[in-house]
Length: 490
Ligand SMILES: *[C@@H]1O[C@H](CO)[C@@H](O)[C@H](O)[C@H]1NC(C)=O
Ligand SMILES: *[C@@H]1O[C@H](CO)[C@@H](O)[C@H](O)[C@H]1NC(C)=O
Ligand SMILES: *[C@@H]1O[C@H](CO)[C@@H](O)[C@H](O)[C@H]1NC(C)=O
Ligand SMILES: *[C@@H]1O[C@H](CO)[C@@H](O)[C@H](O)[C@H]1NC(C)=O
Image (cartoon, rainbow, N blue to C red; front, side, top):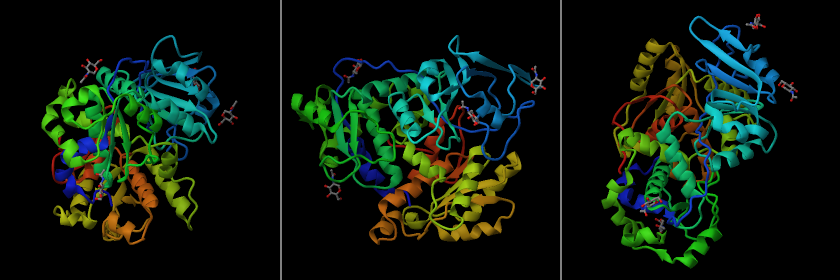
């Protein structure tokens, strides 16, 4: 259902830039002290010594390669031991020595991983190299984490989290990543100059690519990207599924427009607040200046650059994380068990995810039959032994064909698949736009959870999957495209 409008991409290419973003120039100060870390969340079993390998609920959140751990003296050690096994100060296995500091405040130096109660996460966060396990519970826990990462985008919240704790990932050892996130955080909460635009309705994938591109321009022009995902200009709350890209309010925007009138002349962007009304008229000129927006990070590659920017605008918020974990839903016989089994499987990350884009996509590019994806899946299975598959598809026939592959245990969402494209499903009243967005996000983030992924990069959603994996992992992800190589313009 996702990118119905890939074909519009070319047309929108220039427009996108503009459309997405509104910005304000940076006039001045940079007040934000960013704590530096990015995060991602992954739940892994520990394979070490007497620390148990647990493959069922809940999974131990300590990764097997984590060797230098601090458990804060105010952390609930029992909670970790219940799922990971008894913790000793030093554990040695045949290949590694794991140091676990107990009883300190985890601030004497930096650690690979720190376990801390939520009240103290900010206190220790500068000392985390990779993972922070934040213990907490309750209705507001998710929102508190959203507030924490909103202005500290170096942290990534694991969408599949845990029970009684959440896993936050950061990239402290990657200085460039940290610097890029710090720049974004500095600009997105300054509220002085705005780059303000509307993202007109389009495919799920292309909307967010457009927003990511908007960030590239606002970074260049030192503005705050303020976006509305609607075709109308009146103030409306932006889409609620993500952590808002800015803490600035609509009245900040109006105030900025009072001080500095909205500028639609591209050549004057550097000294004004920018308002876009028309993609074609206002945005066009940007397309010719693309070299400006791929600056100092060039050597990291375009894929890295666009991945980090796009991920910034689609960080799932607490509500979305709840949807995609699928643990709260009761609407139907057996559905909850199904969701739970899928979530447990995804928490292990030992799976191959496959995005089969059929549906209306055939009008844009040649469809690849399911068996060819499965041929690739067999190759991955031979190489890795992995036999769980998470399948994302809009084609009910593909779901029916899964019974021909008994080698694999294939998981997928239970949802209507009409093969007609997401836009038609909404206009015909088959599904509400909100439900569709929920199902899509759940599929998207489930797909990015697997360690091995098969997509078509001709699809905006396929590219988005590759980008999310790139932005949230330490190593280049194992993503295979059945057709094109990854490209993004610009
Ligand atoms: C620590 O965690 C254990 C296991 O989850 C729980 O039973 C206990 O109540 C927790 N202790 C405190 C002080 O929160
Ligand atoms: C670690 O804990 C295990 C299990 O409780 C125990 O048998 C072992 O002696 C401990 N090792 C050290 C070095 O304390
Ligand atoms: C944005 O801000 C940086 C740092 O203050 C400055 O070096 C740069 O020239 C500014 N860019 C523009 C386009 O004004
Ligand atoms: C958004 O699209 C609608 C329908 O295509 C069009 O009427 C409207 O002018 C567009 N809005 C913007 C801001 O481009």
